[in-house]
Image (cartoon, rainbow, N blue to C red; front, side, top):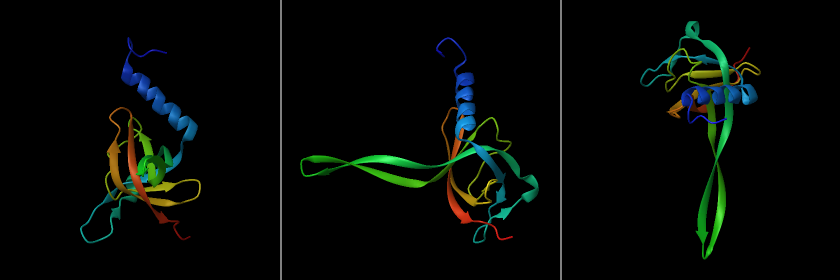
Length: 131
């Protein structure tokens, strides 16, 4: 299907939906109030559950070893990805993400916008909450 003569952003929204349908899982996004020198304070009453993707990105790099060019794969930190249309509020540094399947909790360390249809966040693992 060509998007040249049609609405390109609508096509990218469909691509984002197919990413969620294929790789997505139920995640709870908890906004937090960042406080200097203290842990972020979560707003549990404003938490939302939505579909997102948690993946580990890899980067391909090359290095010269004499006259040879060697490929090197670097594993980066975890990344959470959400459709921009599904987000009820902006994601900020310090917000928390909880996987619904196992209760694993993550903290957002940086937020990147892909400029089209998805928002990507680098996340750090905080562990599972104790019962």
